[in-house]
Each structure stands twice: as structure tokens, then as C-alpha cells.
Length: 345
Ligand code: AFP
Image (tube, rainbow, N blue to C red):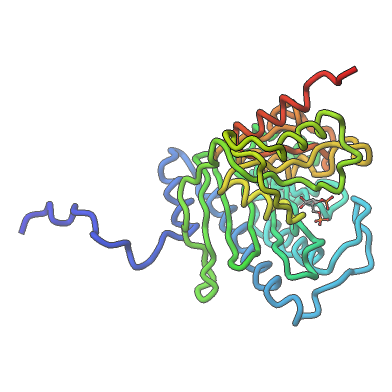
């Protein structure tokens, strides 16, 4: 028999899908000189997410709904699941040995791990907390930086780098199924957890954000606090112009992961602009806006703060806030035009 038979590709899909670990390992093999530490780090992130997903599923039964009675550094009441998810990520990442610095929405400042790990990981352990008690979709968002000098003792200021320096970012969506969306700088890939196996399998490779969409997502309740430019954009996107597919439909969950995920896959725009109450925006730059900006750009979409590219903002503080506008290129550009227009006299 000829050897060439073994090179014929299988006619049907393999019975076992590509795991998240297989996917990251394949990237590692393609990168000369890699040590396996990055693969191991991402495996630890995925482990933490799987542990959190199990708890999210049974939160109502495990007495994990409701508040701890504490107030976090953002001035927000801490929910029990927020605290649990934070503990899991901190524990798993510290034990991995790969993380020199950790930053979390639930920690006061960036935490140094006490050993010179190669990476900085910044995360929002449980985003969309207001949906927890309602059994609504919530998520975990994370961003990874490589330390510039991994041999030096870690310092918290190393977390303050612009999003363009990220080497990986992703989020988990705890919805009807648990999905993990990941980019290591080579496109965006979606993995779905098989709850029977407790493993993430590749479900959508190389996701692209459509160049234009038909859905807008914004908290309309803030209308009275918006600038004139944002109000004009809002009126424009709701106005009748069938040739441009307007008016757009409106969807808003109030959980960034859920709203961003829909926008990534279906296109359109998600906007949380600055307003009279949140003059610097509401969302956090380092562990909400930057990872989402990285994902959207990797998928061919855009992320701005109204004017500037999100990934170019040089952070000054770990919990810094920013306006965030993400989505299809056409729709984000349209927002920018309205937001930067000179106010009418
Ligand atoms: P919580 O985690 O406190 O619910 O905040 C969620 C969030 O940071 C983000 O996930 C949402 O997009 C945004 O806030 C919703 O904010 P509004 O409730 O002001 O619309």
C-alpha cells in the first residue's frame, strides 16, 4: 500500500474536537523559542473559569446569591459570587507560578505575587453583577501582559501599560452555555464548555465582527446626561433611513460581556459614553475596555473612547475608568463623527 493514503484528509469531522489547550499548544509550537509557560498560564485561566462556571450554575442552591456586606474599592456592594470568583482567580493564578502581578476589580491595588512570574494578568472576575440574582448572563474578562523584565522583583506599576502591549485577552460568558472567547493576537476564537467533560472545545474559529450592523446597545436611561454629540448620534441611529438599514434595533443587557458578545458576532455598536454623572466614563480601562478593545480589533472591529483608540490610552491608575465604544467599523466611525462634531451655537 502506498504511503500517500495517510495524507488524505478525513471526510468527516474528527470525533473529538480541538480543546482550548490543543489550540494554544499549536500556537506555541509555531512560535520558536517558546517555553510552554504562556500555554500553562492560559490553561490556569481556563481552569479558574471552569471552576467559576460550575458555581455560577448552582449559585441559587449553594447560598451564593446576595451580598457579602462589604463595599469594594469602586464603592460598589460586593456580591458573594463576585468575591468567590475573585478568590478562585487569585488562588489559581498565584499557584500557577507564572504571574508576577495580578490586578482585579475586587482588589484595591495591583498585587505582586511574591515571585518573579513572567506575566501580568488583569481581570474583572464577575462582570455584570446586577444580573446575578436574576439568572441573567454574566462573565469574566481578562487581559495578559508580558513583564518587561521578568527577573526583577515585581512592582504594581508594571500593570500600567497601554492595551496595545497585551499579548492575550479574552472573556468567559456564563449564559445558556459557558463560552470562552480568546485572542492571543492571531484572530479571535470561541470555545464552548462541554459540561460533561469539563473541557472547552473550539466552536467558532477566526470570528470576524461584521463591518456594519443593525443593532445599537446603550443605556438609554442616561440620555439626559449625555453631551449634545451623543444625543445627536442617538437620534440619528433611531431615525428612519431604510437605505442605510436605520432605525437600528436596540438591545441592552447591562452586562458588558453579554452586550459585547452579541456585538462581536452580529455587528453593530455598544456604547458607554462619558456623561454628566460619569464624567470619565463608567467602565474600567485595564480589565474591561482594553481586553474588549484587543478582541474587537483582532476580529476586524473597532474600539474607541469617543475619539481615541482605546488600546493607545496610557493608564495612570489601576481602576481608571474610560468611555467605551466598540463594534463594527462603520458604526463606531459614525459614532466618532457625531461625538467629535463641534457643538452647534
Ligand atoms: P456590574 O458588574 O456592577 O453590574 O457592572 C456592570 C458593568 O460594569 C458592565 O458590565 C455593564 O456594561 C455596565 O456596568 C452597565 O452599566 P449601567 O447599569 O450603568 O448601564
